[in-house]
Every structure is written in C-alpha cells, then in structure tokens.
Amino acid sequence: INDYGKYVTPYFFWYLLFALFWISNFIIACDQMLVASITSKIFNRKISNAKCHCISSLCQIIFYHLGSAAFGSFIIALVQLPRAILLYLQNKTKDSENKLLKFILCCTECCLRCLECCLKMISKTAYILVVVDYQNFCTAAGNGMDLQGGSLLQSISLEAINTLTNFMGKLFISAGAATYIGIKSYHTMKNSNILKQDDGWGWREGKKRFRIRVSQNEVWNHSIRLAIVCS
Image (cartoon, rainbow, N blue to C red):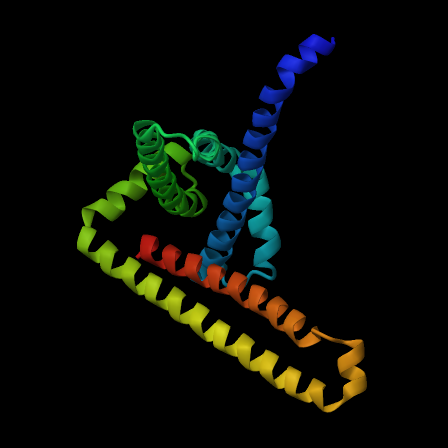
C-alpha cells in the first residue's frame, strides 16, 4: 500500500489541480450566465414585469444550463492544466544552461496562454447565446464565432468601446477608493485614540469598497458584451 501511495500521490496532486481549475471556471461560467440571463430579462419587454429576475434566472441555469457551463469550463481547464505543468517545468529549469529547452517551453506556454484567452472570449459569447437562445454550448460557440466574424469591423469597434469603458470604470473606482481612504485617514488622524485603536482601518475599508466596485464593473462589462451579441 505504501509503494502504491508513493506512485499515486504525485498524480493525485495534478488531479486535484485540474479539479480546482474546473470548479473555478464552472463558478465563473455560472456567474456569467446569471448576469446574462438577468440582463436579458430586464431588457425584454414581454417579461419586464416579473417580480424577481434573480430567482427565475438562477432556476433557469440550474435546470437547463449546468451542462453547458460544465462543458465549457472543462475545455478551459484542459488548456490550463498543461499550461500549469509548463510553468512548473519552467520553474524547475530556470537555472539550466539549455537555452533551446527554455525557448521551447516559453513558446509553448505562450501559445497555450493565447489559446486560453481565445477560449475564454468564445465561451463568454457562447454562454450568452446559451441563456438567451437555449442553445447547447458547441452550437452557441459556433454561432458566436460566426456572429463576431461576420461583422468583424463592428465587433472590433464595440470591443474597443467595451475595453475603454471598463478601463475608465476601474480608473474612477481607483480614484474614488483613494479619495475615500484619504478622507477617512484624515478624520482618523484627528483623534489619536481612534488612530491607536483602529490603525489601518481606512485602508481596509477602502480596499473592501474597491473590490466591491471592481466586481460591479465586471458585471457592467458582461452586460455590455450581452448588448453587443444581441444587437
């Protein structure tokens, strides 16, 4: 049993790492589907009078779209695991004098990273079509690629607008968080007792509000993507 465990343990680590990648991408996929479903129902006039879009969208994803989320996240995890192995090999061979090996590992890892980014962009569009049109993941991914490739110039311009609004949102969020930290620190420094008891409180509160605003900005970013796909 000890010999068996000695040979199985290293592979079991990679198995757990793959499970971590899969579960993380699955949660992200469900989150993107939920945002897409809620946004589409809000802008749909036929069901705009529904009392609670969150519960109905969550039930829709649980009963109809979990398979698509699991399959899309599985494909992304299949790319992330070899990339993690290559990063591990790069770390092990960083002191090696074999420059050819380093070059091959670096190029392969770069290609896998580009493939991962492409799959994530395709999956975002696919999840929107899965929720809106009730398509399976493969069909939605193909239709999404045709939809964006058919009007390439329009897609590039809309993606540029999306990126610009995302950047401006994060910029204003950073400025707001910094202003909040400065004001709270100024008022805290007025009272030495509060400063001694709550040292760093303004920074903690500022960081917390920054994380909340960034998550809200990601929701806005995904809503714009939904408008681009459905337009």
